[in-house]
Amino acid sequence: IEVAPGDVVWVPPGELHAIGAGILLLELQQPEDLSILLEWRGFELDATDVWHLGLGSDLALSAVSTVRRSEPEIASLVHRAPRTGSVFPAEADRYFRLERVDVDGATGIAAGFSVVVATDGRMEVGGEVVHRGSVLLVAADEGEVVVDGRGELLIARPPAPWACEPS
Image 1 (tube, one colour):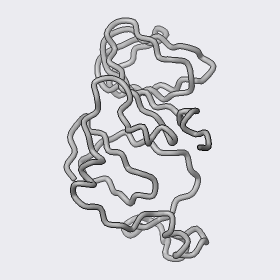
Image 2 (cartoon, one colour):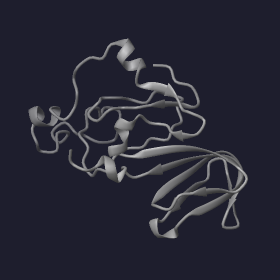
Image 3 (cartoon, one colour):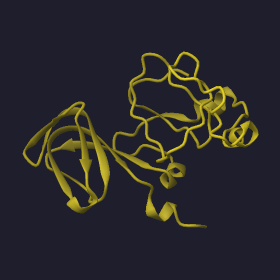
Image 4 (cartoon, one colour):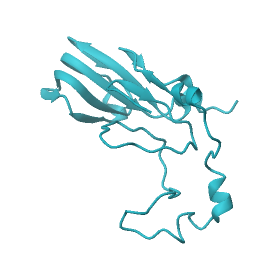
């Protein structure tokens, strides 16, 4: 599918996907330490016997969706990010969150662990200049962080606590 700057693609868990040539993106995913390798040709590794992590191919493939999606279903996973606020559907909150913030003057980033990416502008955080391409790691115990200037930030956070509770 074609994407443009500012587009958001929600890839549901277990959905097979690939990133095409010429795409620069910020990819958020739930923390993991295991990957099932479905494609390895052309890379400097031989995963012929280990791609399934010792689970066996049937069990490993049960972790991914093999149902073909229609073009309208695929198109429904792509949308333009709102100018401010959450960019993912509520379904994503149990895995991770991403907020887009338009900075115009002193703006507070709520307390809590986050990774902050500046996508536009020039700002200052604690006397340090932040500009397009800057990435900040904010510790949970830092409290509210104040950003001053003009620009745009993407703020990635862990899952929403209320979204992780058993139903």
